[in-house]
Image 1: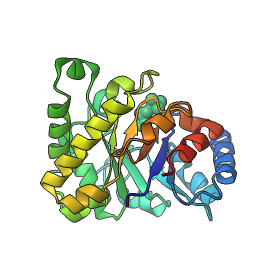
Image 2 (image 1 turned 135 degrees about the vertical axis):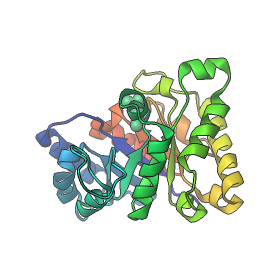
Image 3 (image 1 turned 120 degrees about the vertical axis):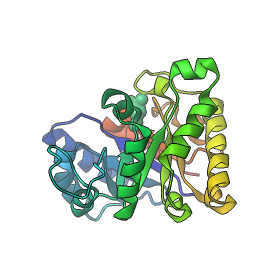
Length: 252
Ligand code: 13P
């Protein structure tokens, strides 16, 4: 049985004091929650502080990005080993903001997935179509190509450890979420693709989560879909009460 997972992607938000307050509230609010796996992904610079603040809690730490090289002359970059060293469990890879604003392509994303899996971290691998692509009717083609290219050369065992996040680009930060049915359709399609490249058992067990304007108000409808195993939450993850309600909505 797949365990639901809800992860907060704080993006480039919070100052240290705000990050600390947010984590303190989440710790309190989520203390008794064991049915849902929970993670938070603060900006790089706050990872050690947030890791310290999360000690002894049931909330996992994640990073929003990584570089695929082991170490060396890569000014400004952070390796998977460094993330592991400061307590990370998860790493978001292939977020649409990185694909578009930072020009990350499938090849870079594939290398990042391999680097993260190689260090025993859990990648949260983001895929999703743009509004134009959806309107053109090529959503499935785009999803298939992102999955095929992103997971190229990765073993079935490693794919099984990956969390896939379906984030339609048109729903991110726009207040327009996919309808539960639209999201469910794509999640089922992704699960079938995973079955095709790995096995039915891995496809049955892999966690596929939805991201894009998930709020306390719409979480229940989205998360009750059979192939939606949780959420990757942007804006609403900065509000402890809203994020807590989303986590509560993910209980099965
Ligand atoms: P919003 O929840 O702010 O739409 O962001 C979604 C997202 O990009 C999570 O990674």
